[in-house]
Image (cartoon, rainbow, N blue to C red; front, side):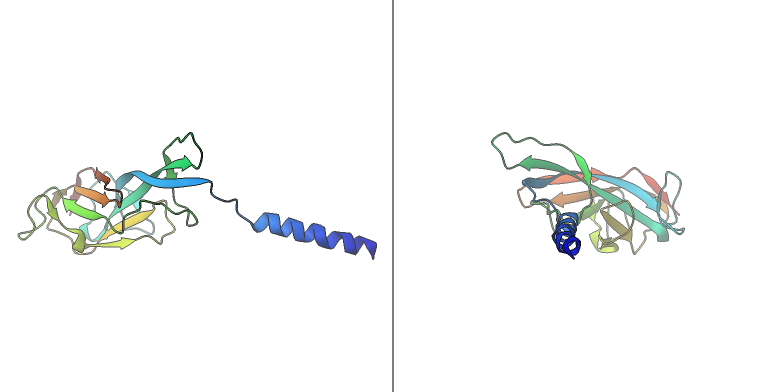
Length: 166
């Protein structure tokens, strides 16, 4: 009976420590992004340097964040980030997607084509955000610029490599 009495607090301690998360002692900021062209024609999307079916084109986005601890000596480092329990303080609502070439007759080069993409942030892949092309342009070679306008007046933008859509 004595053994059960002592095991109960030990068991409660183990469960509490195994399920609690440490407090964040700093601030996390979006400092840059990575973008890649993905081919989503198979079971899983993959990075493609080959021509991609225009109905299966996706832009994969990864966040690069900086961390500033709540101390007198701030520092920062870049790290890939995709954890749901961390809040990025300067994170913008949605990116703007610019096509660097003529998208169609109504959207010449350097036009905003965000409305042709669907934004997905809930996925099981290796990307923090997927930008799915829902209304493909005519066959051709394209590159896109993904632009985040952060609340702290910082603009973060990256261009995809040129990709041939067929």
